[in-house]
Image (cartoon, rainbow, N blue to C red; front, top):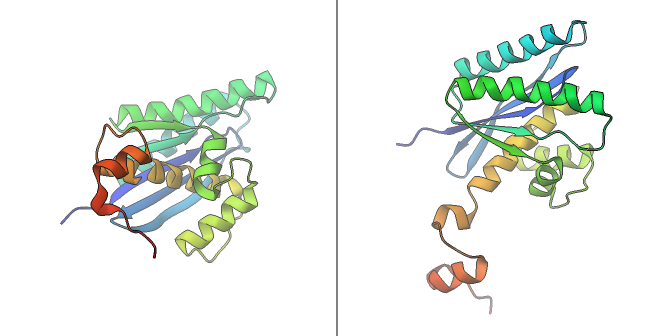
Length: 188
């Protein structure tokens, strides 16, 4: 019997860090945890970075995720914001690397596109899709938590697509269909 695969998703930030753990067991996905780390009470940026590292290490020790997915910083913010966000992301990635967990980074557009089908979806649309797909009742207080869940879900979708699972070396759907005619269902 295979153990469920666990994905740790992170939405980096120096004021609020979103995190979520998603369990994948065959076709069943289950949210293990979805929350934020509030950092605004710490005035020193280095103290915030230490708190991020400690929290990610705690999550890894407690849930033992198989993979780690993180959202890449959004380009277009001011330079100081980008620097702070990059540091937060780097500290979280360092914690995963220290634990020897594979790290994958996704752009915000890729996350939105994977979850909703629209790379320009807003946070509310992303949340509504996650709520529907994962049967989640309660709305979290912060979208940073749902963004982290979206990153984990994006990673699940990206690593479990038919093309990835069926085998490597396919050049697209046409190639997959050509090599797997038994998987094609024709509508009458």
